[in-house]
Length: 269
Image (tube, rainbow, N blue to C red; front, side):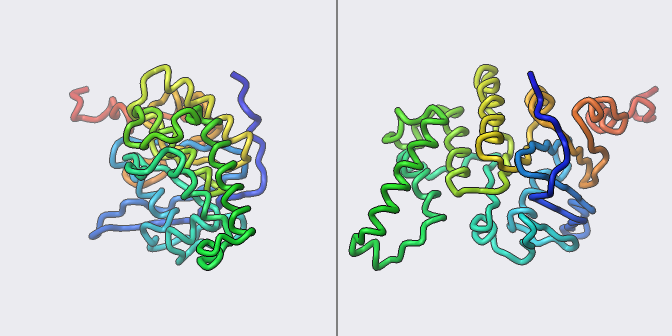
């Protein structure tokens, strides 16, 4: 595989010193990230390390106790999740959150509406401007479904899709919002080996075609090490390593976090 050169560029997503505690437990401490557009960064760590909490901080589900988050040079601090999505920050979820009773097409069309400027009156009166926007949305939604090999299932309810297809639909729906940065939470979860191979190619294609900054949480180390240019490793809410896949794989702190410290008395050695 040819990896895109990881030359630094201007930060699109810039996170500085965010921390949060729950009932005295420090869930995330002093987390930093600089992610340019068109780059793919992995966020890994053992279960409970704080990865999804970081996503919730970035998307406004939680407000950090300290630190700042900028997207495209504009601060996101204090904005609600919907406002952050409008600013260009999109995410998928570890537990799929599609609209199960809507069609595959309508799941994507709804997301496209985030970028429309039509009024309620225009929609009710079926104005020329509104009709033009609806045609553009339909074309955009179908383009995304074709890219994700879902166009032939556009009229099916999303609940009826196989698990791997639901995962792809969720990514397509996130892209329909026109994001600057895309947060993918366990996109390979529940996929079979062939689906994971296809997912790797799809994520690369998304990054190159849309020039979005992608932050990826993933437990499948084969996926992470294959497609990520840089990786941050969390353990108990702290960053213990950051670097290229090769650097992270060799880091003794990462090995200890995943496998246990061989010098630990609890191991009997």
